[in-house]
Image (cartoon, rainbow, N blue to C red; front, side):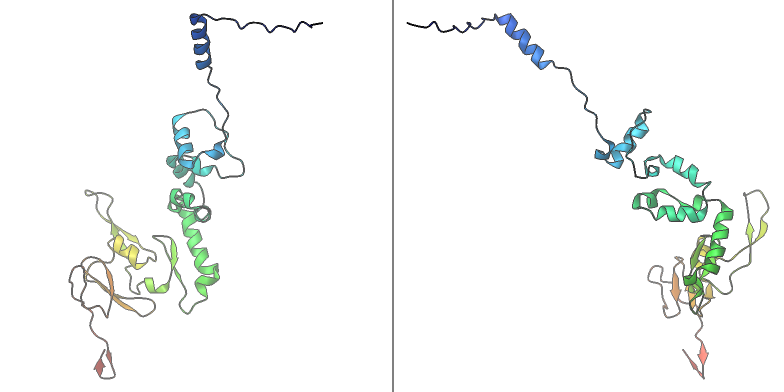
Length: 232
């Protein structure tokens, strides 16, 4: 006795137009937007997003968000932060060191920190020549970078029409004195540690052993010291 096997249904024959519509439907699938994490993006890409769009992004947790802010916003914030805190903030990372400017801090905080640093920090008063604070660059520097006979007053001119006003000067280093025009070319000075230096025409600080400047060919004007009947 022969059993009747179940017959498989014959494949449906599709016409050419139906096949074309199916192919088009396969190609035209809606694009699915997959959620991405901000951790995968670089800082440069994140800054471009923050400057271009106004929608808030899900920033990564446990990291500093200050370096993602625009530079002008960071500068405005720095004007209200004490000088000491901005210095410590600039030491956190290389990115913050390039973006944070401690000199934008209020003037009274810079003045107070320099006075306290040269008085209370052990490394500044423990040496043979204690370090001194410069009240122009607001740094505590070695005593060999300060002149003994620095000018005590200077004429300040606010404009070309107004008359100059005489102002009292606080302690400043030799480098700041050259930048502000208080130490001029050809000037000779002695440092707090006893060293003798002179300034050439290209405003380079040279020692007494350097007789000619290699940059401007200026001659040393220092007079040799007399010691026990001989010159040295």
